[in-house]
Length: 238
Image (cartoon, rainbow, N blue to C red):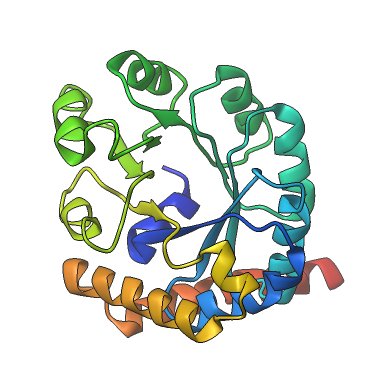
């Protein structure tokens, strides 16, 4: 498994960001970094996605920023150019997966059926998205359909809420969950950063309570990302 995806286990809940206006990128990056969820999957559902990724990465280089809803190789290129560290897709497109692999870009395509899971394994993957999680049957469906595929772990996304996320995080087949409830676009537009901060903190607390992840572990991950960035910058300068 790619090292970046191993970090998902520590973070537990991956904020799924849909942002129409990139002006909120820096503020959201601060809130995520400073309140226990140092990661963002910025979806390519809006024209601002690449700019949002770029601004987040430049503002808080230690933040683990990736691109979601990536459907084409062209969008992979845009994400890489913007500074994305991972790619997530709603479905499994072998062309997109292979293209990411050729670029050494970690990729988590969406799966739902045994056929798609076997295809993912055939492509050399051991971590995939399960989407849409709740409409497709939730954790019961994941456990039933994935039973023959012991090498796979999942990131359920779609219908994940504060009310059901604990059940997912408690299962060993779940590496992390994708959720958008703590980073609602309307809350950003309304300037409700106190509300967003509260929801991010509550999500981080859920992970801590379910998986025993303390502040020390989060700070360690935060420092590792920042240290890696500073080391790369040092090498580049020298």
